[in-house]
Length: 514
Image 1 (cartoon, one colour):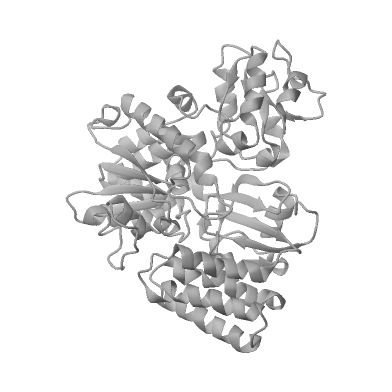
Image 2 (cartoon, helix red, strand yellow; image 1 turned 45 degrees about the vertical axis):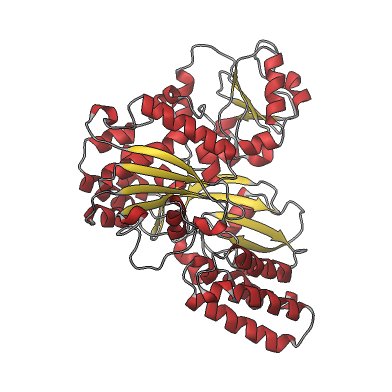
C-alpha cells in the first residue's frame, strides 16, 4: 500500500485540491493557481512538489481513482479543470490522469522522497499518519552499535559528493573519545543543477529531523545543527517551524518520546559562500569563524565541531536513514548495483525537456536518464555534453552516455556523481566558455588558504583566455594541463582539486572549443 493510499484513507471529506507550495512551483505561478482554487470555495492543501517541475504549477484533485493531476496550469484554467463541487474534468487537455499512475512518477522508486508532494510539510499529524517516526521508534529500542550496524548493512553512502560509507563514518564517531559529540547536516546546497535538498526540506522536513535524531542516538551525540543555505528562505522557515513542532511533541529535547534520551537541533543560516559547502569550512563557519578549509587529519569524525567528534552528512543521506530503520538495511540494499546501494535522487536540469527530480535505483545509464526520464534536449537538437556532479564535475560527451549512474562507473570515465545533478547541453554549447567558467568560479569562490587553488585558478583563467585569443595555443594548452595537474595534486580541498576536471574534460573531448 502506497503512502498516498494510506493518506487518502485517512480523509473524512472529499474533493480536496492540492497545489504545491514548493518555492520552484511558486516561482512559475503556483500561488496564482491556489488563489483561483480558493475562489471556487474548495478545500485547498499546499504540499511540497513531486519534483515534476516541467508540469508546474501542478494541481491535483481527490477522486475515487486517487488524485487526478493537471498541469502545467495557469490560474485562469482552474475553473475548467474542477467545478464548484470539486469534480475533476477528466476531458481537459491538461489532465494527466491518476497522478500515481503517471509514467514519469510511477517508474520511480520513491524511498527518501516517498512523502514529498503528498503531505503538507509542517503537519506532524500527516507525517505520523504516513509511517513518520516509525524508524525513530525502532532506533529507540536498539543500542547505538545496533543502529550503526543497520546503516552499514544498508550500504548507504554519502549523497553529497565523496560518497563515503555512512555507517563507517558513524562507527568512527561512536568509537571516538569525547566529552560531547555532534551531528551536523550540511544543507548548504550550492552545486549547479541540484535542488534535492531544498525540495526535501520544503516538502518533508520531519524526515530530515528524524534522520538526525537517529544519527544522534547511533553516535551518542546530543546536539545537532542544520547548516542551511542562506539563499533558501522558504526552506529555512519550513525547517524552523518543523523543528519547533517536533520539540513541542516530544521528538526533540531532553526526553525523546519518553525514552530519557536526549537530542536537540538548531538551525544556522549559511554564510553565502560556496566554499562553506566543504565540510571543514562549514564547521569553521558554524563556530562563528571565517569559512576557511582546515588541514586534515584530523578528520571531523575525530575532531570536528568545537574540536569534538562530529557526524557530517548532507540532507539526502540523513533523510534516507528513517526508511532504512523502518524497513531494514537488507531491504534498502536490495536496490542499486555494485557498491552503489539504494536509490539515487537524480536531478535533471539545463537543456532538457523534462527537468525535475527522479528517485531511481543506482545503475540507470546516463542515456536512459536524459532521453528516457528527461525526454532529450528541450531544443530538440543533438546532445553535446552533460555535466554530472555540479560545477566541479567533468563534461561527459555523447559517447559516454551509456555509462551507468553509479559511483564506480562514473569514476572509471573520469567523472563523478556528486549530489546527483545532471546539467544537459546541446550542440550549440561553447565548451571553451564553460571550461573558462569552471576556472573563474574557482578563483572567485576560493577561500584563499592554499596556493594551488588561490593562484592556480586565476592563472588558469588567464591561460584559457590566451588560448581562446589564439596566442600560441599548443604551448598554452600544455601549460593549462600542467597547471591543472598541480591544482589536483596540491589543493587542500575539493574546490581546487576538482575545478580542473571540467577543464581537462574539455581538453580531452572538445579540443576544437579550446
